[in-house]
Length: 342
Ligand SMILES: [Zn+2]
Image (tube, rainbow, N blue to C red; front, side):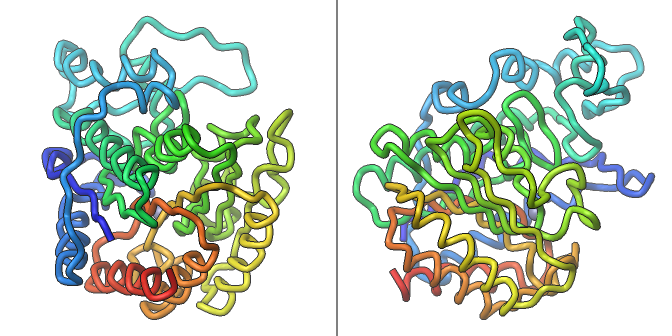
């Protein structure tokens, strides 16, 4: 399988991440990607550097003002007296009140940054745009006839909305890949198996019926992003009935995960998509630092095997999965399981 990877992510290493009131270095560290790359290389996959696909693919998903903000925020932040090294929000609009887009950079940070887990450093824009190029490149490879391609994206993307970063993510790589696949296919499905709900992806396609969004994740009653990921969220307007959430009880193991996956597949088959994007988080693993679900390493081979048996042209887009000795083996198991069944 083609593995698409760019080393332009390495300068993005967020040092400001507030969790339970404490500031710490982000869990989303460059070493994640190098461990995943090493695992893919050790399996003999061809590693391809992406082309620069320009601004079009990201502009097809994200708002112009958000893209302008992301590109310029770090330099503008440096001009603020006493500002920190990384851009962090400290004020947010209230969703139940009329709000006006602010001129102030501090206000804009609050508007476009949904939480304290998406700080913007000197190299964040570079990393995010190349992560999007990685996803675009993988989608184009599949459009050109590859059965599947793996986009080793960092930073990940599935929490990013059209107009807002959050949860370690800035540009929604899975959404960008799906939109590319729409060039040839009338209907595209996104299946998100990251342990966290793919809230940004849901939001982007909430009112659309051409892209089905399905997410398996830890129950948002106990797990971030809390506000979304509940089973009753099914889309609106044109998109009513084209979003499926399958929240799972904390500690769910392989069999429970695979049972939910079978439900997801029933819906995907009925939608009859021409192609599939898998938002491939590996943080549902039993030893992931989040410890929300308990999928085993061999379990990822079974999960990806079932996904391959859908028989669709498939773009695998890396999402979460954090540092543990199992991170590389989990990817290896996933890719092996997909290829064995493809
Ligand atoms: Zn996650």
